[in-house]
Every structure is written in C-alpha cells, then in structure tokens.
Amino acid sequence: MSIDIQTLWADYLVPWSINAAIALLVFIIGRIVARWLSNRLAIRMQNKGLDELLVRLSKNTIYYAFIAIALFAAMDKLGVDTTSALAALGAIGLAVGLAVKDSLSNFVAGVMVALFQPFKLGHYVEAAGTSGSVVDVGMFNTTLLTPDNKRVILPNRLIYNDTIVNYSAEATRRVDMVFGIAYEDDIAKARQLIESTMAGDTRILQEPAPTVAVNELADSSVNFVVRPWVKKDDYWDVRFAMMEQIKVVFDKNGISIPYPQRDVHMHEVAKS
Image (cartoon, rainbow, N blue to C red; front, side, top):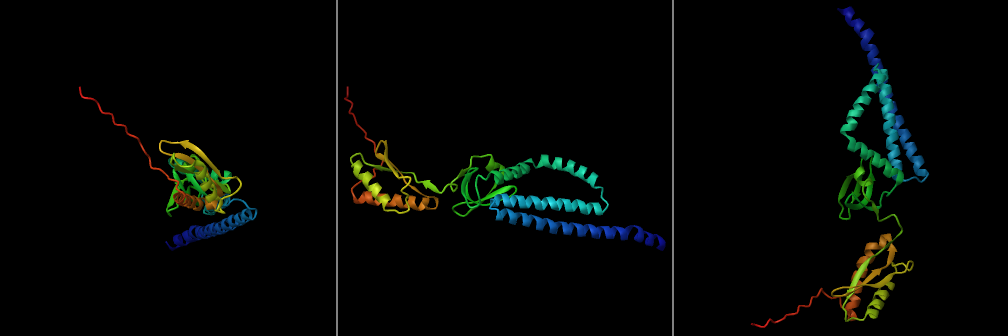
C-alpha cells in the first residue's frame, strides 16, 4: 500500500503539481504581458492623436485577446488537448452567440462607433430617444449624462442603428427664436429694437450675420424669426438672455406681445 501511494505521488501527483504551477505561472505572465501590451498600444495611439473611443476599444480588444492566448497556453501545460478544447469552445461559442446575439450586435456597433466616430467623449448628442453628454463608450454600452445629471446607459446597437444628432460637432450653432408683435405695432421699430439688443451682446457672432425677418402673419400676431449665430458653448446662455432682454425692451418701447385672440360675432335671430 505504501509503495502504491509513493508510486502515485511520484508518477502522477508531483508531475501534475509541477505542471499546474507552470500553467498558473504562464497565465499570470500572460496577464502581465496583456496589460503591458494593451497599455503601450493605448499610449502610442494617444500620442498619435487618435480618438479616445478608438483607443479604449483597441486597448480592451488586445488585452482580452492575449488573455485568451495565455489561457490556452496554461491549459496546454496541464495536458488539456487544446485542439479539442478549441472545437468544443467553437461549438459553445456558436450556441452562446445565438443566445446573446444582442450583445454581439452591441459589440459590433461599438466597433463601428469607434471607427467612424459620429461623436466623441464630451459631445452632447441625441440618440435612441435620449439627449446627453457622452461620458463613456464601452464594448457593449454607451453612457450619457443628461442635463439634470442622470446617467443613461444605452446599448450600442440602439445608438448606431438610430439617427444621431451631434450638437457639439461644429464650433458654432444658430439660436432659433420667434417673437410676435401686435398688428397695430410698428414693424420697423420692432425690428430695430431686436437688432440693437443683439448688437449689445458680444457673444453673438457678426459672421454669419444674425437674421431678423417677418416670418408669419399669424391669427393674433406678426411673428419675427430671430436667428443669431453663437459659439456652441454660449448657445443656452444667449438664448435665455435674448428671450428676457427682448421682452424687456419691447415693454419699455410700447411693443406688445399679444395673447392669442379670437373675434366672436353674435347674430340675433328674429322670432317668427
């Protein structure tokens, strides 16, 4: 009995323990190499000025690819038939792929976003029915931060397959506003007041020139469209300021912004 235990220890347990230790060491070294290579790749891509989304995606892809290589190398040291393991993994991968096809489409969509760059980190976008600033683009999801400070996590496939409106892509934006005056008011005077109010705000760009034009003879008012151009970061501040300042200057100069009105005519029907 003692000889059998010694034989078992010498012929099986010791070699297996050595191989297990080597396999663990191979996997640990593989993880270190994977982390080093992915970090070096990210640094080189950043130094070349490549987009942060593409850098992150490439870094994660390289890291997990080398982790997989290290795992198979460790399995080989344990005596596992890696050819059979790859075949089994392929079959399992097919089954899992069919089960998690949405996740795979999210990954592919994330790759497309990183390659074609419809937006960058920090851009304010509207996609999949949600508006917010892009704070993170992962392998499967994109995270937006809404103006009221809510984090919205959207699957990449919903974003890439939907219309994307990027409000931050261009350096300037046009502020579209409508102001109505009464039919009795002086149109030329109202136009001059609007133009002088905009001229006093240095945030409004001179080129392209602001537009002030009568756009509609509505039921209760003559409507002006007012369209100044501003830097994208000044959009909301200028819009809020103009809405208030033009109302104040209209009040001071006797220009009214009428309420909706309707004339009702009463006819008396003679009794028979």
